Every structure is written in C-alpha cells, then in structure tokens.
Image (cartoon, rainbow, N blue to C red):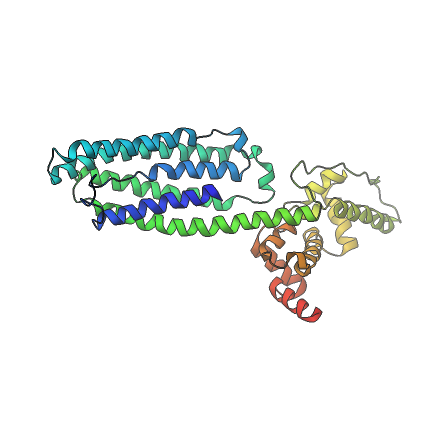
Length: 356
C-alpha cells in the first residue's frame, strides 16, 4: 500500500506542478523564481517497489530506491543551483529559455531511466512467474498486466510531447503535454481503484483460506490414488463404477481439488492414474452430470456457506467466489444463478432475512 500510494502521489504531484506552472502560480514569486521538481523521476521506481512487494519477492530483488532517491535529490539540487546561478545574470525571457533547455535534458534522462525500470519490471512480471507462485494462487495479475499496457500508452504520449517541445525550440510547447496530463489523471484514478480493490481481495482471500486450513500454494500433484481398474468390464460394471466414483469423490473433497479453478479431467487423470475418458464416463454415469458441473456444485455449496457465515459478512462477493474455486466474478455469478436460481447477493439477502 505504501508504494502504491507513493506512485499515485508522484504522478499527482507532477500533474499539479504542471498545471500550476501553466497558470504561472510559481513564476517569479520566490527567491529562486521557480523550480520544476522532477516528480516523474520517482514514478517507475515506486511502481517497481510496489511490484516486488506485492509479488513477495522483495528480499530477492534490487533495492532500487537506494540509488533513485539520492539521484532525485541531486536533480533537485542541480535545478536550484542552476536557477541561483542564472537568476541575477540573465533576463527573464532568456532564463526561461535556457531553463527549459536544461529541464528537457533532465527530462530525457528521467525518461530513459524510467523506461529502463519499466521494462525490467515487466520482465520480472512476465518472465519470472515461478518466483511468485504464492501470489498467483490468490491473484492472476491481469490488472497489473493491464496497467503496464496503459502505462505504455502514457510513455508514447510523453515521448511525443518531449519531441514537440524540442522541435519548437522550448517555447510555446505546453499544449503538447495536455494529452499526457489528461491521460495520467485518468490512469491515477484507475490505478487507485484497481489497486485498493485487488489488495482488499488479496487480504480477504488469504483470511478465508487460512480459516479453511487450505494450502494451494505448492505443488498441486498430491499423492495419487489407485482404483484398481480392470480393463475389461463384466456384468458388475455399474457396481464397480459406483465404488470408483465414491473413491474419486472422496479424493476430490478431501484434497479440496474443486478449489483449483483450473482443475481438469486431465489433472484428475494424473492424480488417479485413470484415463480422462474413463473418469468422464464414471462421473457422467453415477453423478449424472458433467465433470465441470460436478465440481461447480461443490464450489457453490462452499460459497453458500461462506456467504452466510457471520465471520465474512463484510467480505466482497468476489473474494468469496474466487476462494470457492471460480476463476472470475462473472463466472461465479453465472454458475451460482444457474444452480440456485438467484445471484449470490439475492441468495445472501434472502437467506439472512429468513434467518432473522
């Protein structure tokens, strides 16, 4: 939360500063005339720090702020020294001109540094998923991938604005930054909403899983069961299938395999040493439903229990659905209504009304 808030703060301060400078709220009102603090230099380092802490790999990652913070302070000190040096020996117009040239060089350096950290952060996210299996059992990280895509668009707007600034010889260029400021403002709200929502979901899902004494963070291939299947069926085929189904059902429930949102017949086949076709036949013949419906029924039963449990009264429906084994909120709602005839919210409200 700290680094997510600092990331949002850095982008916000940069936008507020740009607006204030455009309105000439700072110019020529202080002893140093005005200084453009390079807040943009801190944005990507804070994103990187948020990422490695959210993925729980901070202990194995570079402590980049030890380098970035001193560099940031040096950049600010350099700007102050620059303004102090030229403020008494140059006209206002000339001072503005050379100051914009100076800050453009600084901005190019910031852009290059920021892009490098951005690319490295994406590399960690995309190429090193094996480093953070624990978080992947709680969050598929799609919202972070989306943020990287949206940020790429922001970089394109930044590069375009900086190009126009240089092309126009550092005068009359402010309009080129308008799209970037509007876009980053929207991005701030999106990031704040998604970040707070996902962090809440993460905490709730951890609490639910801890209360159910479930460990889905390690290797899902638990000791297999041997059902001693004979290849050639006899007249006792139905009875044999019933016995096999009881063992399969016991295995899935005891190992809580239905909580794995990507658990398939192939996975069950590897766990039971039976072919997928045989398993499908057994479940269809005995349970009278498909394997997916069979698992979803268990998931819905757990979701009902959690929805009515007073310990989870203030938990989000999404957290309960995901921890019940569904891979998304929309899937949870669709399957729940299919099995119960009500949405999770309707079920919860009506059931609690009856109980009260």
